[in-house]
Amino acid sequence: MKLIHTSDLHLGISLYGYSLIEDQKYILDQIIQIAEDEKTDGIIIAGDVYDKSIPSVEAIKLFENFLKEAAERKINVFIISGNHDSAERLTFGSEFMKSSGIYFSDSFCGSAKSVQLKDSFGNVNLWLLPFIRPQNVRPYFSDREIPDYNTAVKTVIDSMGINSTERNILVTHQNVTNAIRCDSEELIFGGLDNINSDIFSDFDYVALGHIHSPQHIQKESVRYCGTPLKYSASEINQKKSVTVIELKEKSNLNIRTRELQPLHDMRQIKDSFDSIIKNASADTKDHEDYINIVLTDETDIPDAMSRLRQVYPRTLQIEYDNYRTQHITDSIKMSSVKKMNPEEVFRAFYYDRTESELTEDQTEYLKTVIEEIWSNEE
Image (cartoon, rainbow, N blue to C red; front, side, top):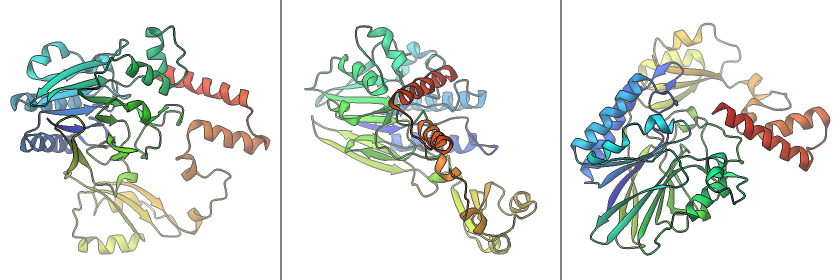
């Protein structure tokens, strides 16, 4: 059994006003070609198919064409919804798509959907568990206390009735503790949405989505494949890929990656404004790449963006790295805030204003308020 694992397509996303539809079409075609070259039994998409719960017409059409290409090549596709997706909209038409080998997770109704595959070694059970929150799970397990994300996901897994003598793959979209994050990910009151990787012990492979950096958690078989494209400057140095999973008999698993080549790469150029303009003609890399500019000039350059876009048309943003920016004296630097979850930000703000720490009761109340705000926004 051979499967391709990808996730977090974020179809329809824009970067600083630039539509990535053509870039995404290019990379989806590449994924189809890799699946065909590998003679894969299926493609797993572990959530966040779209960037918005109400996707654009262009994004929907793009995904429709991707599924059509897969179906024509007899490549199965297994899809779950992520926190950016509307599960109801994403799964529209899922029942009649099964005949074409397209399988969607249902909107969560108390259990995970399973698809059973077979090869010469027996059954492979593919469990499709969409992004869930504690409030999604509580109505179906009213006899249990479900205070957090970890308990919610563990409760659902424990109710699956997994046959551990067979091979089992879980496809899910959650934030696993100790995962390395990127700026392009949505911060969900960080820490409160964490789940522990030890709840996955009954699975031969866990195909994760939600985190944009390719990585495994504690063991190779619990893996984030990462996004197929770079969606923030923090991903500039990453090599994007899909993960290829080969299953033989129980406990015999091979995991490797196939690197993806973007239509337009994302890179950073750091220098003074005059030097960047002067050296642009000698830059042998593609000038149509998405460029993050870091200027070392001590003074702001008038009309810098429009002037830079004359030589690098896809310049995304301009930052300054100089004496002024290196000596910010604010009590909480913006660079630090970006790495902090909302609870940590409030704690720092509270301490800055009162010179005292939050009490346990205040902390619990803060967590409750943050969760309520997040739930209402969704």
